[in-house]
Length: 178
Image (cartoon, rainbow, N blue to C red; front, side):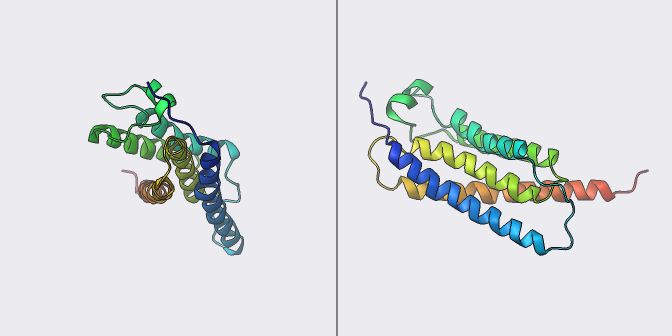
């Protein structure tokens, strides 16, 4: 088995520029805008534990679903990086897992300030960490583009699904009881 080198410098540069910086910009803008909003639902800030759980909600599905396929084991990942071909059910399983875990965390902290944004941004950042790690093996060409697109794609996905959860919760709360 031929070992493929892991590029630590590439991993940290992708992590910094494609996960940390966009997350800080988005969260900074939301926090500044919420200072000027008079219609803040809650004065309670979003807890650090919720943010860390959201980070794990993005990281774990990618780490558990996308480090193996039917022809390679998970140990292959640590020697040669992630496989590049996955069956559709495996990709769907990863996406569904990310959405469900993020929604559960969002529902748990829905009454906190900026819950939708914080949960979604940290979930996307967690997924991007796993994707950047997988992209840091072997020959480096256009992996940064894939990492950036993964951040954008997962962020939009969980923003939409968590926003739908918010709408469903609002409808359920205002529904008259029989």
